[in-house]
Every structure is written in C-alpha cells, then in structure tokens.
Length: 186
Image 1 (cartoon, one colour):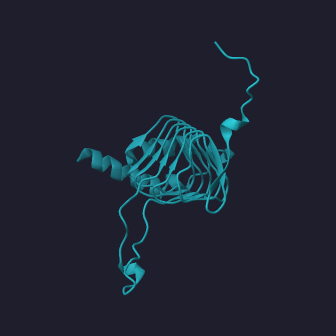
Image 2: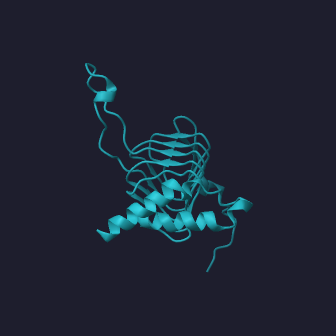
Image 3: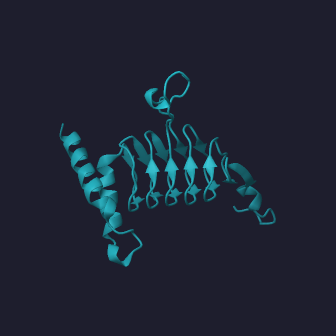
C-alpha cells in the first residue's frame, strides 16, 4: 500500500510539475531538472538505472525498464512494456509503440474493436535512436546499433547495425567500420 502511494505521489509530481521543467542542457535548469525527473522516475517505473536522463515532456508508463546512463529525449512517448538497456540515447519526439488497434472485423468500426495484446519493445545496450523515430510493437534493436532520424522501425534490427528509412532497413554494419590493420591487444 505504501509503495502504491509513493508511486502515485511521484506520478502526480512528474505529470504536474517535473515534466514541464526546463531541458537538462538549459542554463535555466541549474542542473536540477535532470535530477528531479530521474528521482521521480525511480518511483514510477519497474526498473530505473543510475544516471538516467528523462527530458522535458517525456511520457512513459509504469511498465518500463531503463538502464544505467540512458536517456529519453524531449517529448518522447513510450508505450507499456518497454525495456531500455544501458547507455541508450533516445532522440527527441521519438515514439515507441507496444500495441496496435484490432482491425480484423470489417463489419465494425476499428475504434470499437479494442487493442491487441502488448508486444514489448526491447532496446539493447549502447543504442542511439535519432530524432523523430517511430518504433512499432514487438521490435528488438540489437546492441550498439544506430537508428537514423525519422526512421520507422517495423522489424528487428541486428546488433552493430546502422538502420534508417521507412520502413527502416540496415544500411551498413557498424563492425565493418573497424580497421583490421590494428595490432592485437593483449
């Protein structure tokens, strides 16, 4: 019961006040905006890592996990059941969806058919998601990947990939950028 009251209080403070504080990089922030939003986030979500940055206007649900050193950009919108790894950067205005409307019955309006089951999105460690990316339900983005600005991710992205477009496609593998002329490390 006490945990629910704390969660509710943190949610009210976040939605009513903290979500509207200046962005963390603004001089007006005085370094407090980031700390206040991260503090409240700890009580609001399933798992919240250390050094998390939740920017102004970010909307998320209780059923989220966010790892160490990860951040949500300005005005991001996240659905239920999202798992974000460590060292993940999510650009501003990004939308991550975890369910769709049902639409199988053509004899009924779509708005009356309800929603599908939640299909969680997983973003592995060390991922950079650019500005205004849309990620659809059930997608997994592999570690150390980059999703270009404006991409619409409809399918899984393998690790170490650079992906972009609508629908997003792998443009190149990041590991191909490595130089193989380097001496081996001991």
